[in-house]
Image (cartoon, rainbow, N blue to C red; front, side, top):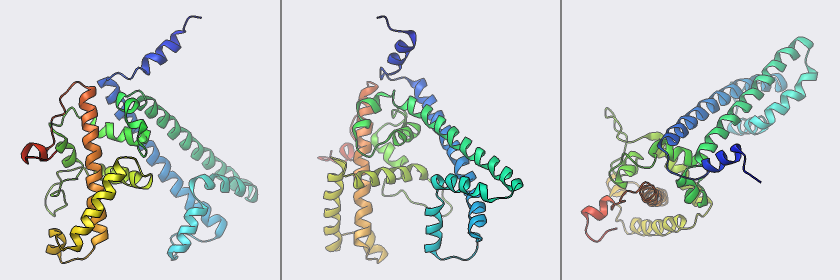
Length: 284
């Protein structure tokens, strides 16, 4: 049986070849997804308060303790909210029913639109060789995490060394906020790195979790011996917290080093060596 044009086109798209145009379009699709997602979040947040007030007779702006607010957010989360609205409809006057019905349809449209944009983003990302050949096999790296990595880094075409990725991600020791000075890193990217590191720790991602555990043990020992210069200078004693952050940073830097190497190999470039290996003899 001969293949249809549609099947041939699908197989061609799944070939996993490096395609700069697809990367740009994928980044655009990722940005569009987050824009639509933000619209959905804002819309749901607004209607959530109205429905809560209608059902409970209390506004979320009234003074409430943290436990009440948590229960409110759990009971009226996005998934349950639509169900709550449907349950509320028969109890309302006819005029009010018409108002709420329109809002319900609007919220459902928001969710459908967000789903469509997510599907488009996923279609582009799943065709990327970096995802097909490596990232999809790493626990904690989802399609969305891959989309963000490609959106910020692409295939590392602009960076001279992996240390460029570390600096841009705010992972170097001097990456900090200072009043009156512009940032030399991307705060959103640093947040992404923290989320990826969190996934590695919680899902015990092979390879990276071991880096974290070993580094944390070493840093805790260093703190115990009073060898952490930063804590000594600041006169603080947050050994577990600081050790955790330092170990996370080391783990994520290791991941970015691997990301750099894979990107270079897939685009026929020499990965070279990181800053430490180039300027400090004996370090890799």
